[in-house]
Length: 104
Length: 192
Image 1 (spheres, helix red, strand yellow):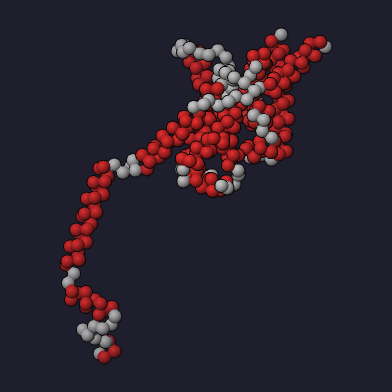
Image 2: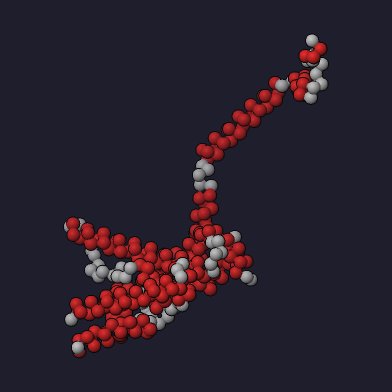
């Protein structure tokens, strides 16, 4: 019986020990450390944003853009003024070369 | 400034906003951390990680709960993550000691060295016993018990942080107390 009473007292004392825990103040340099970590994290984000776009990829992209421009420019030169006019006339039914099938 | 405006500034990564956030929450976040991890250095490290996580994840905050609740949720998760990691390390060290790869191992079964400046010297042993007993509870029970009894949060706050109903928190708390009592009785029985 006495053992049980002792046991209950010990258990209760253990539970009650929570009430005696006092508040612990955070270190004075805590904020400074956090702000430093946040700055580091923001630099990491900036670095990772374009990290995949390596100089090799940048050069390859530049070459692609130049080649595409040259091809487009050559194509533009090949198409003559007459061709453009006749295709315009054809599309709007102004062409005189096309005979109507009804007249045949 | 309203909370919505403040959150908007946090999303824009304003240094002034983060400085204010740390001012407002450093003590509360640290208090929660040291409630879960009774070691001042570890708790401070976790609390710092919480603010970095807030910075990185603020875009994911949808505003369906209060900002403080969201921050405490991150804090709780960070603490649980830390405890899990430490326990895994302990288990691994134990296995290595069995297999003969001698690595100096801390013989205690608690995940960290107790270093809580808020615990009075005369209560040190009792509180250490209680913290060890809490660590043996199922995670859901240890979370609810720690947030309510040690960190001093209300049932309503615990319910919001753990995304449970009030009645569920009450029932988990009841089971936690019952299990803790059993664990402590066993501990003192073995001690005799």
